[in-house]
Image (tube, rainbow, N blue to C red; front, side, top):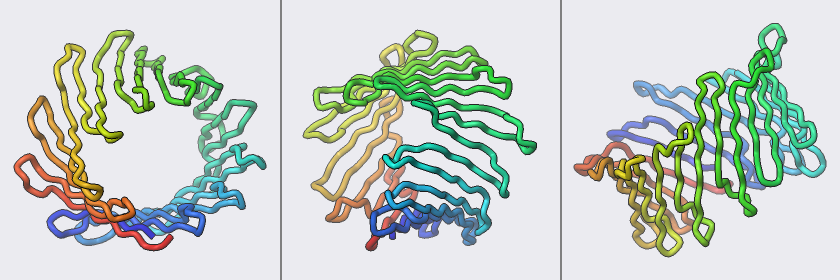
Length: 273
């Protein structure tokens, strides 16, 4: 069981409880939001087959079942079908055909309201959205490197007539080193990632005019504490400190204002799974 609690002024804001089976599969995940001291629960329950694939997922709000997701897999563990139901009515279904997954969304009367198609190839992934008349609404294409890393993501909104492109660069250790964002072919912004001793030390975002927009700096104190400093336009905005146990599990996270005032505190408890 894992327990995560977010507090502010010694009062709980929310709590997350996660239970596992002996194979470390998540059996349940419950989120409790607190409003004036009263907790409101949202819970997800998982059922697995003999190969540890999730065949059924149930979603609850205030202990009432709201929707159910069912999946089937082949003997190799590949997803074959997926269907979602609400109040015992199927709201969408997914079928695999060759290297494509076709997800159909249904209205109350059973007619099609939309369709999503995912296609995976050796060096690319394509995701296409259609409306009820089978017209393309949007597409998203990922181009992959030989190691499976995304090197470019192309998104096109056919309704808004907007094209966005993200380009990714990696260092010799295959860590992300630069991300560029383009709008209709023009550079809008870019982000640079820096490392030291295999640890991320700085993330800096720049405008298209090479002006610094925001910056994240990471400091490591031994093996049990990290500090994240957030800057906006080169001015400190806030900072976050994380503490870890001997198993490298985060046990406490504290957020501060730039003046050192505590914003909120999250604590994490771990027991046997």
